[in-house]
Amino acid sequence: MTTSTTRWHNWAGNVLASPSGRSDPTTVAEVTGVVISAAERGTRVKCVGAGHSFTPAAATDGVLISLDDLTGIESIVPTRDPEGNVDGADVTVWAGTRLHRLGPLLWDLGLAQPNLGDFAEQSLAGAVSTGTHGTGRTAVGMPATVVGLQIVAADGSVLDCSRESDPEVFEAARLGIGAIGIITKLTIHCVPAFALSAEEHPWTLAAALADLEGFASSADHAEFFWFPHTDAVTVRRNTRLPGDADLRPLGRIRELVADEFLSNEAFGALCRAAARRPSLTPRLNRVTARAMSSRAYTDRSYRVFASSRRVRFREMEYAVPVAAATAVLGDLRDMIDRTGVVTPFPVEVRFAAADDVWMSTAYRRDVCYIAVHQFHQMDHTELFRSAEEIFLAADGRPHWGKMHTRTAADLSATVPHFDDFVAVRDRLDPDRVFANQYTEQVLP
Image (cartoon, rainbow, N blue to C red):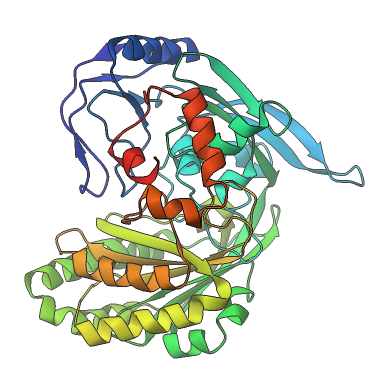
């Protein structure tokens, strides 16, 4: 059913839209009907998940489709390694399923997604379509775990594709930034359920940069957060354990203190203080860094990967070659010190293995993801502009769901399969039913 709607905004509040209507389909047939009806009227269509993209990827003045009623697991097919041993399963999941709900469902089946980002509110389709990744020197991003998907094309046809069936559509659609069609379900390769032993402790940026590649390989999933205007970082190292390992989760009181109070309530108060008096930011960052203490715990993988993030911010993230990351971080530190630009938010540093997804920021190269953030009540313009110059000088590729200024004119030389992707888009959506401001920026 399509109804009139009010204005829509994304999670960060930096993207606003006024859709002409909203649809909440409960079946693939209803999705098809909405697309056909809109196309006949010359109206555009966009699909939205949790609205966690910082780009206008889901914004539209046409019909906004939510797949929140297309959720759950449809089927499971066990998979085997070359020796014939079961090594997981290919799980078909309805596109609107939120990640925080999928994790427990898979765990109960003895399965897990091999890697996740640090935010669990996203829909599976939204996370895949924008290239969501976690961290891990040998771990690939979420689109690379997709082995099949179903999309509704602009003419209303329903396409089931994989490497074996309609492979070009599959390659484009598994990281399609909403331009190829509406994903209604995905088949993802899952591994046997595993636990994560988590270690968090304070460190220094100087120590991290002394051997960044060594740090990246120091655990199955390693990352750190650097507090600008200081040399302080907080390290997170997660080591994989069997699913039947003894779990030692954080106690409820400690979780409330560390994740809810310190990471959200207290940190939010410091950010608001920085917004009122930006000159205090370096001092406030030192306070924040000192509040970060060491802790260790073991829990289900999906519980460790994601954390609660209620302080709103804006974000830019680029993937740079691992070999260039040390210099990039040094340049970023020097730029912040030189220009006097301030931010109370830490810079996040993560890693990912090369993959073969056409539009992936890690296509055919191991990468270091470096993300700069700004509190939503503070101006991000100068910080992001200066950071982007540094990222581009290192041949960085922008995360499709994070803020950037790249356009089709320069992305075509940066993304190896850009022209192949555009050719699939042109074939499936010649009238640009799924176009919007963002696709017009990044695609010809």
